[in-house]
Amino acid sequence: MRFAFLASLVSLATGALAQSASADAYVASESPIAKAGVLANIGPSGSKSQGAKAGIVIASPSTSNPNYLYTWTRDSSLVFKALIDQFTTGEDDSLRTLIDDFTSAEAVLQQVSNPSGTVSTGGLGEPKFNIDETAFTDAWGRPQRDGPALRATAIITYANWLLANGNGTSYVTNTLWPILKLDLDYVENNWNQSTFDLWEEINSSSFFTTAVQHRALREGAAFANKIGQTSVVSGYTTQANNLLCFLQSYWNPTGGYVTANTGGGRSGKDSNTVLTSIHTFDPAAGCDAATFQPCSDKALSNLKVYVDAFRSIWSINSGIAANAAAAVGRYPEDSYQGGNPWYLSVSAVAEQLYDALIVWDQQGSLDVTSTSLAFFQQFDSSVTAGTYASGSATYSTLTTAIKNFADGFLAINAKYTPSNGGLAEQFSKSNGSPLSAVDLTWSYAAALTSFAARDGKTYAGWGADNLTVPSSCSSGSGASVSVTFNVQATTVFGENIYITGNQAALQNWSPDNALILSSANYPTWSIIVTLPANSVVEYKYIRKFNGAVTWESDPNNSITTPASGSFTQNDSWR
Image (tube, rainbow, N blue to C red):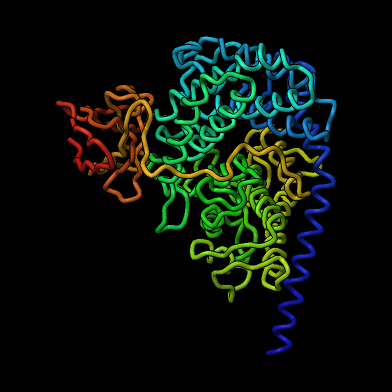
């Protein structure tokens, strides 16, 4: 038995060394390729973005199955936040002109009237535009309210650097502040309205959106105060407090994970939540659970539940140990392009773990709580709740294993990255071959930020430290409630049930944009929708099969939502 145990230890150590070596090699080879991949997709001088205006980020040069030759506010802002972090920390001094082009392009896009509205009537929530800075007018999942917040965060980072370095004060005040104020005012006034999630599929409230809106208003208030725009500080701070309060409602204490969206009828286990943790990382906030910092007990518990959701559903993960890295995607129920691992989702898991390691080393200890115990027991089955100082054997055992675990995710991406280093959107759940859009800009940016975290790099914080969650929540300009709709309906294979009604969250009677219900408890179809409180809501269910739409019979269904809390409505198809 002793020899078997020693052999097991040797095998584990050998595997860890192999993963670390694979990650080392991948970072070395992929870093310049990923950086070049990002730059190739920006503006008219980008080698793969001809036709794009200056500062415009194309999502991908792919023009069919899928066509991603557009510019998304979310993707562009996340990409430029990574570039701005490189520039403002001296990693790449050559990027300033490109960053100025980005801010100018975004100022133009803000003013483009589009299907979501004008600059003053909701147009800032438009998710994507043509790369020549004209409106995209086809049907789409709109609005998407994370874009203005993410754009504000990127530009504030740049503006703070300009001020700190004694140049561009008038440029900041006269050029950048008007862009920022439009976005921040939009967040302040619209955060409590329904939104499509970052995957553009579910219209409800979304954890990622709520968290990045909270961040934007916090740093927006601080920035406005810095440049003397004090009239907005109180409003931004008030709604930031409301957002922080609302953010807590996504936590599922029974399941130990963050429910990604309030609607959609899925499990809620979603890459959305891991992406939130890394894009709202503030090294000064330690392991704060209220803002779901990477090393917080809630974020770690969530990461385990999320990763585990993919272990048994894809053949690519077969034979992988239950405590080893596995390929992950957007969410386990995903069917887009067949439902596969995403490079950026795999990178995000690694990045959250590297961020956690940074903070533990910074504070000289780590905490194991009842919430995070299952996460840590993956690496030491005997560990118990407590605080472990950096000089302890337990701290060393856990952090070494977690570093190897993180490296394992980079090793997965390395294994399924083609020899030329090109990063598509997805790779096959069965054989690992690249799939969907080629040269996805977000995939390249995600690789770069995960590599930076592995190297121990951190960037400017946003004021997440020492925040207090309000004792009671306000939803700002209007209260809302969570309504569960259940309908008994038998269907044939390929037929689905949808709902639409007289509220924006129910798509204003649009059969084309109606919300799909989940058949997880068939023949009961279900969906959760955030609706205005104290309101009369009329709605109907519809069937869709082979392009044909069948409405329920008259009259309309009707409910009156309560003043607060949640509500369940049980119906039968008629």
